[in-house]
Length: 228
Image (tube, rainbow, N blue to C red; front, side, top):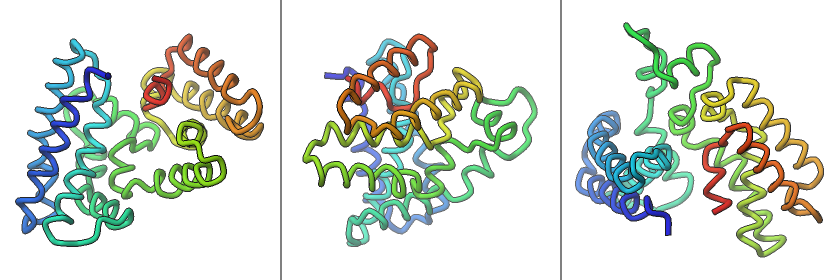
């Protein structure tokens, strides 16, 4: 089992529990109050992994989702995909402007650099959009492959390829600049044009791409999760 999983699950449960008891709290005040929970979860993860950042992005994304679900539960509202994502968008409203756009004294963070130099808003932009990329690109592919092939693992791999092909992954920019991002997108698009993992030899081709990205020190977000 992934050593980071227990502290992550504990952390996400804490987001959920916290949100269920604060249903009257205004949406614009939730994010700042969630930060201590997120930092505690991140510290637990780093302790479990001996200081290696394996899931910081997942803590952010699933923490927001857990809080959104908690608020809906507290209000007795249905737990539907669009309702949950819309709630995330409300909790994250203006996060890009507040955290990435503002000019600050001192050295820019990686996230600020990505946004101010390249216009890439990363995980914050995705959250503020209510996970638009997931809803419009990832989930339709996943659902279609599951329906047609009845294979969850195959669906995850094909979905991953779509995200690699079209998502502007700031983790890739951190490691390889815009050239690294474009390389991964082009290679993933090439595999998709050939049918991705749904054709004979597709999984082997994806494994070869994975090997090449390791050599180039390019890690597309959650890519490693799917190969474990």
